[in-house]
Length: 63
Image 1 (tube, rainbow, N blue to C red):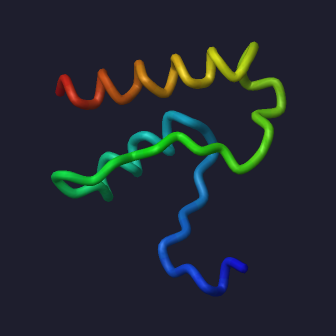
Image 2: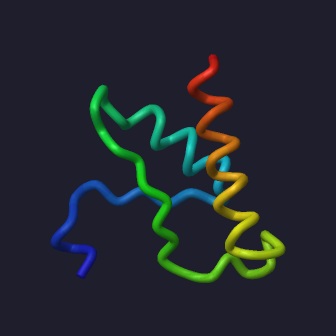
């Protein structure tokens, strides 16, 4: 399946993912949090993962 896509990036954590998305996104783009797998105990819940994503995006936009 991945061979059909050319823009695939692997990162180690949500911080790296948000940073990379910020670097790659162009004005008007939408960056969507859509995890492809479980977070393997990196977060207490899916809500916490979403909250951290939002917090990281807000911090990135503030700089």
